[in-house]
Image (cartoon, rainbow, N blue to C red; front, side, top):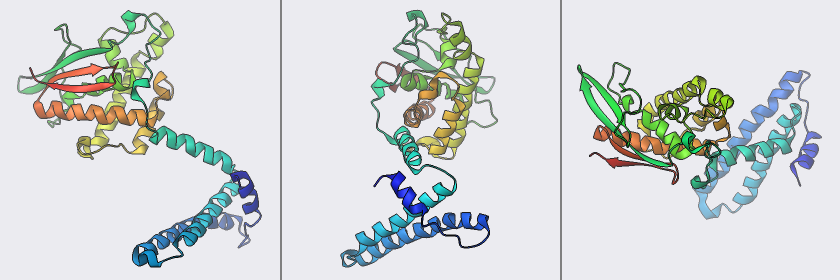
Length: 293
């Protein structure tokens, strides 16, 4: 039986318990909570009684069926198509949980002149220093020249945010994207004026910085991902909302998670060692801390 047929049959059994339509519409919401509890009750019995609980499979199917009925009832009340709900859910879970070949991730400058492309592999060196009692970091490229201005934590606390540019390089390595670094490396795609303005311009750079700070504030409550292999789905979905009008909009939440977790691994190594060299490999989708000179 497909979801459409099930929903049609289930709709015929929806009951009116009161003359108040609002109350009738609330009842399935309360019912789904109760049935979820019934599902857990079956698990409790199985854990308690073990193999002696021989009716577990049958009862669990029955309780899951009741959950499905309430889902169908709520969908019908709101004129939702249960098939469409299932399809949307598959899109959501594939976006979030499907294992991906990171080497197949998109590069957003593949079709542009070489002079406008990110180097496919390069090293950068985070060099810390003190200036008038203030901790700073400068980033030196392979040509020995500084990339951008020196950075501080921009806060009263020594929280290591002066190393945060590694997040932007992580976006290059894993997502093939960073309007911030594209500007610093003078790789803006000026051959296309619309792309130069809308994808490589100020608004895109602000969006990227916002993402970095947004994730950092979340990471602070999770020990900077030192012991984590995942990022909360709500955080990843928020990032997708921030980027829904720029080229990176087609990145999945899983891709963002890969970029964030791996960038924080190197960020923590930079903080622990107070700087050092990093390999940014777009061609191999890697961000590797190489140590200090």
